[in-house]
Image (cartoon, rainbow, N blue to C red):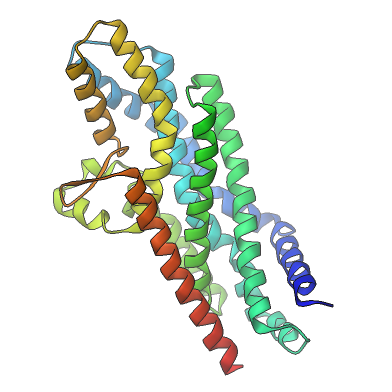
Length: 310
C-alpha cells in the first residue's frame, strides 16, 4: 500500500473515531450552542441597544430588521471565530486518546511513517473542525435569514475563506499543544481553559473598544484578534452598506454618514487598531497567515523531533 493510501486510511479512521463518540461531538458544539442561547435570551437586546445608541446621538432611527440582522451577524462572527479554535482542541482528543490507550504504538510498529501518522491527525482534525463549523454557520445563516439578511454572495464566500484561515490557525495550535499532552486530565484542562478564555482575549465576546487602552494594545498583538476581525468585516459589510443607504434616504450630509458608519465600525471591532494605528484588512490576513506559517514550522519541528526519539 502506498504512503498516500495509508494516509487516507488513517484520516478516515481518525475522523470516524471522532464522530462515533456522540458525547465528544456534542462537547465540541457546546460553546457555539451556549453563545447562541445567551445571545437570543440576553445579549441580543444589549447589542441592539448599543447600535441604537449610536444612531440616537444623531437623532435618527434605523429599520429594526437591519438592526436585528447586524446584531446577529456580530454574534455569528464571534461564534465562528472562537469555535475555529475551541472545536479544533476538542477534535484533537482523538490523537491524545490514541496516546493514552497506546493505539499510536500499534501504528508505529506497522509499516507507516511517523510523519504520515502525524499528518493524518492534523488533516483529520482540520476536516472535523470544518464540518462542525459549516454546520454551525448554516444554522446561523438560517437564523439571519429569518431576522434580516443583508450579506451579499461575495461576502459569503469570503466568510468561508475566513473560516478556513481560522481553522488552520486553531488546528496548528491544537496540534502543537496536543503533542505534549498524554493524559485525560491534561486534555480536559487545556480544552476547558481554551473554551473559557479564548473568546475574551480575542475580543469575540465583548468589543475590544470597550476595554481600557492598555488592554486594547495588548490584545492587538494577538493573532486571534485578527482572526475575529477578518470574519467580522465580511459579516458586517452588507449591513453597514444597508445602514449607509438608509442614512442617505434621510438626506444626511456625506460627512455625517461617514462619521456614523466609522463610529459604528470602531465600536464593534469591524475596524481594529494597534497602538493607535488602524490595521487594514490585508494586514489582518497577513498577521493571521504569518502566524499560521510560524505555527506550521513549529509543528513540523515538533513532529520530526518526536519521531526521531521513537
